[in-house]
Image (cartoon, rainbow, N blue to C red; front, top):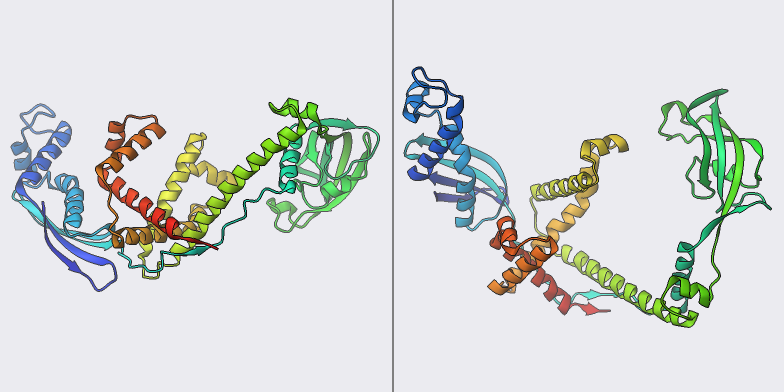
Length: 426
C-alpha cells in the first residue's frame, strides 16, 4: 500500500489523495472475503460451504470478492497514506475506487485535515487568581453546613406553617369543577418555599395549622406541560396532617465530639479552617486553569473545519450515552422521559465542543513551536498510570491506546504545563 499523489484543493484544509493497494495485500483480502462468504454459497457438485474459490469466481464472476476485499483494505491504506503525506485527517468527504483487478487497485479520497495553527502570546498570560484567604465567616459557614447535615425533623404543634417547614398534606385539584388527572395525592411531604409546585400553591399553605381543611385558588402557568391545564384557574382541596421543621443541634463541645475526633469547639474550628483552606486553594487552581484555557482559546484565530466541532459533539454525546448505560438507561429512553430531541442535546454540547477543539489545536501548535518531545519513559509512566486507574495491566492498556496517540496527548499536557508555568498572576 502506498501514496501515489497528494494534492491540496482550493477549499481550506482539504486535500485529494491518490492511493494504491498492492497485489499481495488485495489477494490476502479476497481470500479472507472468500472464507467469510463461502459458508452461504451453493455451487452444483459441491457441498454447501465447500466450493473452491476459483469455482465460485468462475460462476459469479472474477470480482465476486472484490467489494469485501476493498472494504477490508481501504481504511488502513487511506490511514497509512495520510500519515505518509504528513496530514491529519478529520473526515473523508469523498472516496472513488479505480482500476480493480487481481493486481490490486487504486482509489482517490478527498479529505479534510486538521489545521496546523501558528499562535503567539501564550507565554506571560496574565490571570487574576481567586483569593484563598480563610475568613471567620467562611469557617462559620462550614460549621453551619455540618449542623445542617446533622439536623433532624421534629413535629410542630404550637404554630401555623411557615416557609421552610415541611408539611404532610392530602390534596385534590379541580379545574372547571372537574377533578383532573395527576392532581391528587395523600400524605404528601412538601417543603414550603422550595417552589416544587406551581406558583401560589405553597404560599397559600403558609399560615394554616395542623388538622385544617381548606381550599386554595391557583392559576396554572401558560407554559405548563399539560396542554389541558395551561393558563387555567384551579382549586385544590387541602387536608393538613402535620407540620415538621428542621431542628439544628447546639454548637458546643459535645456536638464536636459527635461529629469529629476533636474534643473542643476551638480545635474543631481549626480543623474546619484547614479544610476550607484546602478547598479554596483547589477552587482557585481550577479557576486559574479555566481562565488560562479561555485565554488560549482566544488565540485560535484561523479557520477551523466545522466537521471537527461535529466530531467532538458526536464523541461527547457517545460519552453521555455510556454514562446513561452505566445507570441502566439508554439515550432513547432518556429523550422520551425528558421530552428532548437528540438535536437539542447536540446543540447544548456545541459551545463546549468548539472550545475543546480550539484548545487542543492551540496546545498542539505550542508543542510544535516549542519542539516539545516525549521520551519512552514518559510513555511507560503514563501507561502504568492508566493501568492503575482502570485496574488493568500496562500491556492491556497498550492494546487500546496506541503510543502515537498517547504521545500526542502527553505533548499537549506538557504544552499546558509550559503555559501555566509562564503565566503571570495579577
